[in-house]
Length: 602
Image (cartoon, rainbow, N blue to C red; front, side):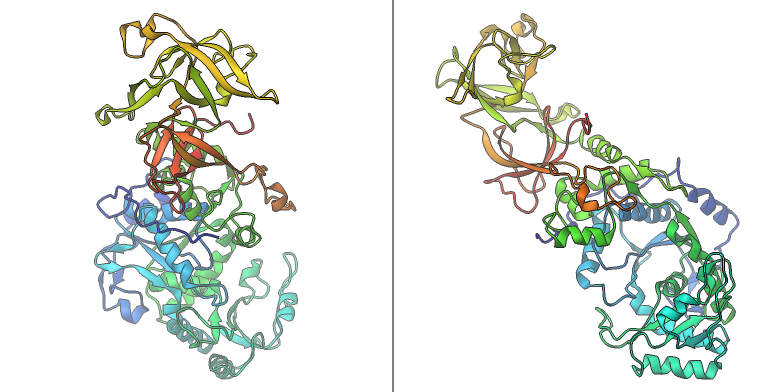
């Protein structure tokens, strides 16, 4: 397993706010909501003290310079993947578009699964995508664990106001008494426990006097509510676990559904944008904030939660549990394996931040679940790289071509554009010699219909060079073709008056055998062969694509300097990048990013 490389060396083009502009104007249902809120002056009187805090803190602040506040709130228990990229683009993009600020908040309320390694990786990934959380002199990078004192204070206030109680039922009893979608729940025998008694027990839980699972703090709402999430949800549990930031200071931890709305309110978030699985939690989100505002702990206007459909892509698995299984069982080479949908893996594959943002921009922000075709992501990469990628030639499956009438020891320089979309980039030069490497697929002893490349007696053009006529081939003892022979037509060199004197239907690419640069090339494809590998009861491991990576020894056009991260379009083959971990200029290791066109399933 390799260690994911640093992402912060990317150079995206920022707008005036420091973030890369993302345009969701055509397909984002959240835009008119934000526009209506701003037109109504909903957040006009909101104050901001320069840092998160409860009402007493924010009341001392100035009018908030941010017109809106959003947040990207990952839990630091894994590496970010393609689905997170959509949320990042939505939250940071909308904040930038409407003169607001987006916070990066680490929801680190589950100490048993979180680690500083993931915190660092998440921050790097957000930066790599082109976004920044600094604005108005504030470094808006926050941690839920910084709010543990306030969360606990609010829990005591809820108990004292009759809105929460300590329950001694076992987890199984709580689950059984919760009811079903068609039957109401059953009140806990501890539901009417006196507030003073619940408060004393909560303090004992905080002080470590009770074992894990023995007591919980529950909100007191309505055990007959049609929304099961309002049937006295658990808001605190006992966990004697070491936290990566607070150490052993706490042995009780808030549930995410309790922590999340409080975090939003403390940070002055206006639009809390979540994925659809949190839709059923919104009533509790609103209930909790309303109770805390009534108790004077939080200021109005309170945050509002909105949900959009998560990004689901064909041929991709984004479950953290399943991604972890792929890594631990060795199905991939690590979190940054170029076949993984993690942002580290996509970057190492050669996907650019701008291509991922373009892909996210082209997928609607809606409330309807759907699965986006992976080919749309691949096309975004092509559209992003085509105007800027340097051109070159590589031969991935080489066979020797000998031009029998070309003088031995002679060479001449041919020219080709560095990038046809950028004439100012000029031309590149490379030698033509008697012996060349060509693609094995560019020769057939017996040509099928509409095959216009090399076969005995046929004429083709060596791209940027001469027209040649195939005269035969050489085979080994097993009957395999090991070399192809041809003769060149001296008056047909590209760029000369005789270039059009002989009409041909085929062009082939080539590199000089004497000058070509040897390289290892990984031909990456989709990790899964099934478009929905994790649907239903499928064994997602049984859907792995056995051809997701093929490694070949190739020859590159001389002058192709494979410094880590360099990217090219190899003519006729696709887009490739020098691997950021293993490639060196002296020993190039290249990864195929994407082919020139979608040929999946063809």
